[in-house]
Image 1: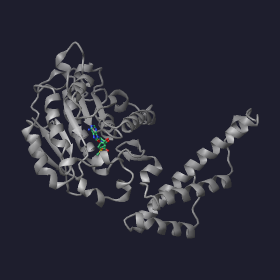
Image 2 (image 1 turned 90 degrees about the vertical axis):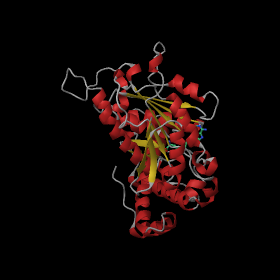
Image 3 (image 1 turned 180 degrees about the vertical axis):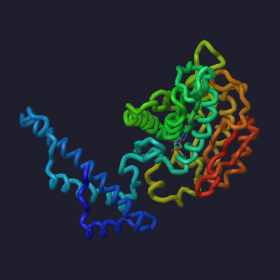
Image 4 (image 1 turned 90 degrees about the horizontal axis):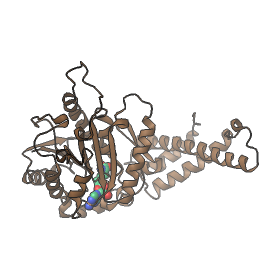
Length: 375
Ligand SMILES: C[S@@+](CC[C@H](N)C(=O)[O-])C[C@H]1O[C@@H](n2cnc3c(N)ncnc32)[C@H](O)[C@@H]1O
């Protein structure tokens, strides 16, 4: 859809309104305005089309479907301008995050739906998910290499019990679970994502459907053949461990060795409650505090998840297809952290839970961002 240009005086005025909510950056504000205007036009086109087709059908003029959906250009731009004004009010007066207005956020090759108050996926999380997927892909391809063929990307049917099995704890929008499932080799992996919050679980399930539809028809698309499931679970409930074992994507009831997981990932809440007041209004007022803050200076989830991981990971060093490998290069636990100040404590919790190999992974801003561990 070609979108009309905003008159330059209007563009300048609206950009200036956005500057204070864009880190005082004029270029950032101009970019936000472009996205908001594009979104306003797309929504105007949808709502106008819907309103007109309803009216025509009501009026009994529904015998020529090709003429139903043609709002005039000026009708569409009136609606688009009214929508843009509303979006700018939401941004400036109510400090609504841009992604909650646009309704989506790109994440790897996916479009993640965003709805308040579920946490909006962050670039740091996207960055380590991509890193992890490429690190895992090579080991999964090696393990799934069929010596009878020259291809390492064989997509032969893999038994449920042989699938590489991942749990994403505190899944939120499902971005990590879906990102991994969409990047790991087709037909290799099963992912379970769990979250305490009902709205987050619903959003994660919507994201699975939305992205499957988006990627439909794309050849050899891993998200179509890797399994993903989202469930509601409080990690601190008494039965959490048993429930995770029961939901393991590789579990075959008749085979006790198929239970459990090859990898646990988590981006848990990690902000110190005392820091809450210092966060931007977009975060503090719109995102779920349960997704942000954790007791014990933001550390409360780590010892719990590390212990839980140690007890739900598959025993022995068995990989998919029953191959036994040295796991030096294959992570078993990946935890996002808030920065360098949490490295020492989180590494200690992870070591105490039985993980002997521990790495600190740094993001593009050179901040400690993940603890990567294996037993
Ligand atoms: C930092 S967000 C991470 C969301 C998503 N994984 C991401 O990276 O964008 C933390 C998530 O943990 C969930 N959560 C908080 N307490 C929990 C609990 N006791 N059990 C399970 N999930 C919990 C929140 O609902 C929230 O969705």
